[in-house]
Length: 254
Image (tube, rainbow, N blue to C red):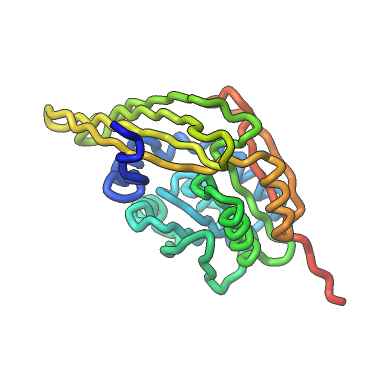
C-alpha cells in the first residue's frame, strides 16, 4: 500500500470513537499535574478563566477543570463530542486554532499536543497569535509539541493494546521523516479492532509538524511573549517532558 493512498486524520473523524479507549483520560494525570502546577505558579490562587485550543477529546483538560473555568475549541466535531461527554462543565466551541477569535480574554491559553498538527511556520505563528489575541496582559501561553527537531529520531515504532466495553483494540504507529529538509513528519496508524469475534483492520495517516526549538522560541517571542521552557520527568517517557511557556508582555500606557 502506498502511504499516500491512506486517508488522513481518520482518528478525528470516523474513527474518533476509538480515542477514549486508546488514550484514556487517566493516563494524562501525571503530565496534567505539571500543567496545573505551572498555571498555579504563574497565575496565583483563584479559579482563573482558561482557554484550550485544539482540545481534542479533552483528556488533559479533564484534570484541570476542578481548579479552573475552561473554554475549549477544536476543529473536529467528533472530538468535541468526546470532550463534551468527559467535560460537561466546559464551554465547547468549534473553530480553527489558527484563526478563531472568541471576543473574550483569558488568563491562560493552552494547546496540548494538538499543536503538532501545525506544519508550517506561517500557520504556527498564526496559532501563537491566536493565543496572544485571547490573553489578558501578562497572561500565560503553554504548549507541548509531540516532537522537536533537535531531539527527534526517525523512524519510531509504538504500539498499544487496550479494551473497550465491546471491543479490543491494538494500535500500531510508525513515525518517520520522509524529507528531513521540510518541517513535517508522517505517522502511519494500523488499528486492529476485535469485536464480536471478528477482526476489523483500519489504516490512518497523519502529517505533523517538526520544528527546531529555536524556531519555537523565535515565533513565540515574535507574537509578543517572553519565552521559556520547563522540563519534567514522566514515568512513561525516557526523555524529559517539556512545556513551552510564554508570558504575554505587559504593554505600559505611554
